[in-house]
Length: 428
Image (cartoon, rainbow, N blue to C red; front, side):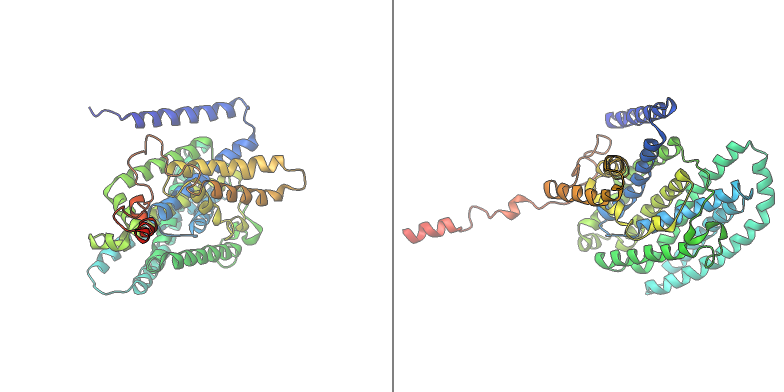
């Protein structure tokens, strides 16, 4: 029988203690609804930021598109649960399911076919994938409409609370997968760009998604989303159990990925692309893999967020807000899983909690001035981030931190002539 490591045991006990403690505080109404919402928002932001930390902190790809996939996941999941609770139809979840499955199969089959063709450029691959996925999505819609009635009847045969939780769970997973598939398509041509240009391209994606959401009721054909007016009627079913479970799952997936051979290759791309390529590592594959996994986290987090307040508005997903996870990752420490989670909760508690309550009435918006000032002071005093390269025992001594220059390379060896030795030689 394999012995459980001490760090793993402490981590397991810790998550149980945290979960039970928060649940009891809510159960006995010691923690009011305001602070309970803040804690759930912190957990959601931690999932989003962990995805960005994979992309930027561990793979070295500067991205501002995490918020776009967050929005995609939020609206996709909200539409599925809205149709179930308000329209009493399983069509939303069926369309998501078949679109994700058929598109995924299409991506795998086309990828195998393309691998046999040498010299096909990224834009041609992108066009081929896009046409195939558009046709497969149309087929998914037809299949979903055919199965809508029997699946709805089957779910109605189950107690309402259980059927709602089933639809909600499936919507979270499928929202993450659809965000991952969109990121795969987007990453094909864009990941060939340099890091700074890649960041600008992902920022452009965030703006595009925001504009599409503003016109979702007319341009996209989803009247229930109500476009720029905002989507209402979303069930508030994101409990502490759901958000905490997915946060723990994100941490475990991140940790196990980074400890695997895939994780070592991902980190090697961050350290030196030329050296990694010389060692036979497929740079494009690992960049796309990291981008897809990070986007999956964002999509799942968006689904959880959509069911906290029961309301979605496109302004929540504008490009200014896309800097929030980036600030959290840098604030917590690039390449630090522990720092990212801690900074996410600090972001929620300070910006949406303490500053909102402590500032005088009528000056609540000044928290957007105080918060950047706190970040500026933090960066001046501790540029490596809140926790730097620190990791809890469950992660420590496994995940490589950002490469630092060796002091021996900075300071000249004693055998080299210096200004002091030159002056002594002149005197002699």
